[in-house]
Length: 637
Image (cartoon, rainbow, N blue to C red):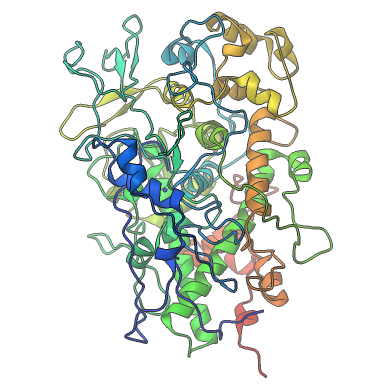
């Protein structure tokens, strides 16, 4: 067992189909207390599969044949240190039997196999051999309600879900030869002379969008994961499969180093032109641009996600300050790595003790063993033989839907209780709407999630110096499932132990009105897209999602918990928290993190995922449970 007094080891150490991977460079972290760079084995830890994916991303958009790509793939083995206390940034060496398991740049796992029209890459076909109905027409035909439509939850629940999405999913998209976005739809109503082979635009001339009258919706396929043998098309995940705060700390050592101040374990925090601390300077997901790019998976949710991201960045610095006070002799590397370890543990605790209970319900939490072991402080169910890779069904469909739709407005709430509603569907500067992050966080935690809807049309700017275009997010999600070869709803439902052969067989899971809408657009029940069928299911008892989405999410979160050697409750002697430290960490609440990051909040409801009510009243930050960092005080010999 370790304390902060141990000598820290410098280690290698994102969310969306719109994210595009860039250089995969590596670099050491410098220690300001020592001019020599700290040791790292990151360059030697990448397996052939990792390196192959990294090389493919460097060639993204450029012509290269498989023979050339595979001839460059290294064959060296991974090198891991058995006694590493801190997890790597890229996920390598978490599993010492299979060092690349769960690491970034891995292909997605498949729960229900592949479903391509040609068994290799083309979109899934209908049972009768024809094309599936147009994704836009499907969206118009079915009434998909958000998972939080009738529940007393706050907008913070959906915001936290989007942060988890960033942590676990980052699928690169095909780009042009110079790294530019590919434009698939014509500007004049006629097709371009040459359409990129990876375009799969959604066209429907009979039902144009009302605002723009356009009949074509942009859609570019996700990049194909490289492979040196024949097989169906896979997509790769640039994020790790572990719940490790990679959206905050970076996905490789170079990115992590760029986010650090190299002083007292602190993270860099961006300061606006008006002198206000804002979102961390991280990935493109938070890049400051003049206008929101609503085509990004975060879309109009970006201000809320930015505020929550800043909350965790500020809280990391708060933890580092506390640890520095307890042990003034600690250097930057020790403070940073231990603070990161603590914050990741708290992120895991909040996710499994506060968030998932509301999404999945008690039955699924118990069935998939997602709760802390009763009567035991540490868990001993780590399984190194478990494949922790993120499933395509989870990443492409289920987790995406569970985040909820986009809100047309976000409320800022100041300390005097004055509400300022911001219309984030209009063109707005991200800096303007995040100029008061604590007010934004206070507003998001008290604004009801039921104010959001799955709109059939939003306006977005996709390309520089162009007019806004119209998008249908449900249609895009349906199309993305087909792009990734995700099998239909009934196939995934069968994997979850619930086989169905006819439309009327769906009556035990959804209402007759929903079944009727499916029959109006699909010829066969087996044609129904997973996104659509799963979204129309009645929620399980105590949860927000239907049985199939609940199954897919619970299955993945079970793997995340049991397949992580650094899980915060682990009993692994190399990486476990000491007993008093773990007891302290289990006092963590999201409300406490919010107060620690923004003391000016002063008051918050104990359950921030729910709106303020008689059962969930505002209380003083001082009255909330807190983590006793005295547990990190060096032990006397």
